[in-house]
Image (cartoon, rainbow, N blue to C red; front, side, top):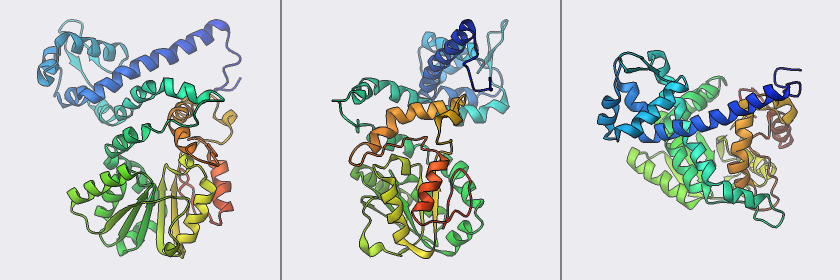
Length: 345
């Protein structure tokens, strides 16, 4: 039995394994609430041990509800409580993770709220999609901008020697599937010599992008509503770089979109594709709880996007690096590097 294979577990061991998954899910609901209510921020601001009254008073919360949340965190090993003083502590080394990683917790609440809609999508005579999630997702993504750019996008680009120097010197860049434009605007602010275009099919997202642009006082970026499957003809060979962050698997026809991207790039252009890098075969992801999490999120979210219109390819978030590489090569690109599927031609 391999590490990820549970088929050799006896009934008792497998029951305990399932119970652990259930327990973790319940705790994550409290983590989500803690993030949204600012509880993690409040406890991480404390210098040294703190009391229930310190946190409840700071946030103007009812002490009894605050105590129940703190007790959940103690039982889960996230906080420590001293038996005698009743004071709580957070190890300094844990604070960065509590402030960053708990930001994904609210996704659990959103997925739970969509359960009844998704159950209808399973039925043969039910809908293919449940598109109301986009408004929530645009808001969620707008809150994660700085973290995503600093911890994911820029570090990956630095692994490709030519991207950052070209952005610094000044090139024309398309952010395809820009959503609320926060990534585009943050990057445009960093690389003021370059010009940026953000394109998204959601009018709401583009409105949010333009509002954020105005607040930042940017003049080197524009946003417009458009379809990744049918980019403007006058864009042919018009861009030095196209980047697509966590979007390709959400499209109803990613193959057509890839061909469109190839068309609009200059002959020496660069295509930066950042996708979720699991394997394409679920068997190869067996035992990987991170992959299991993404399959779950995909069922609730990504399929709702890729099933909105024909041909409803529906690859989902775990389309996988092997199949994505085939698609990229099939669209005429050459892969110059592989860092969570950052590709360039």
